[in-house]
View 1 (cartoon, rainbow, N blue to C red):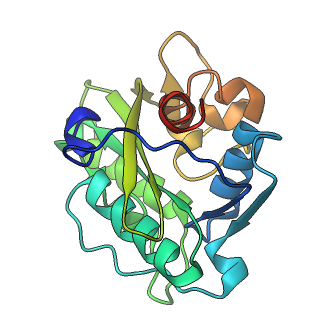
View 2: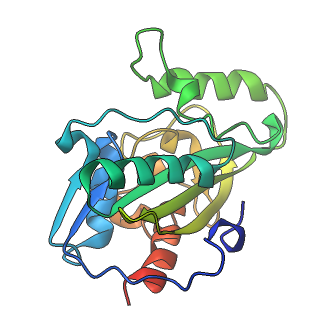
Length: 212
């Protein structure tokens, strides 16, 4: 779903005017990346885990639907504005998979996540297919306790490589090479990754909309 379709109808963008923001995630890597992107623009940034909240069931079939589920749940439970990211890796040779199920591909029977296992699934599924094109998607939703929300989406195009390279970043970063580079996201320091990442692109759009 594109950014234009992801926004509430008949509502002008709402500016964020507070000094507290709750990030609807239990992913420490994602929280760290967002904290670095915001810098000193937010006085207090906490995660859903800091409030003891469990992750809501993500029943959506699109990135916007799942991000909205998370953001609105955390905003309602905490009474504070909440920011949620739903992201995934879409691979041409796999028909767009794992897509919104990128995290599910990493889930083990005990509920923990193993992204090396997920990357092996990608490799096995692609086989000898010469089509290595892929892109990361990040949909950011900023929701207020009164139900209002703003949504944006960012893409980072690139290709899949094997074997995985680098121990930076998180998730599928070690097998994704962004356009214009020869390194994987897993080989880049966070400051370098932020120049081209899907989340950074979505973040810039959200800043333009809600943090003037």
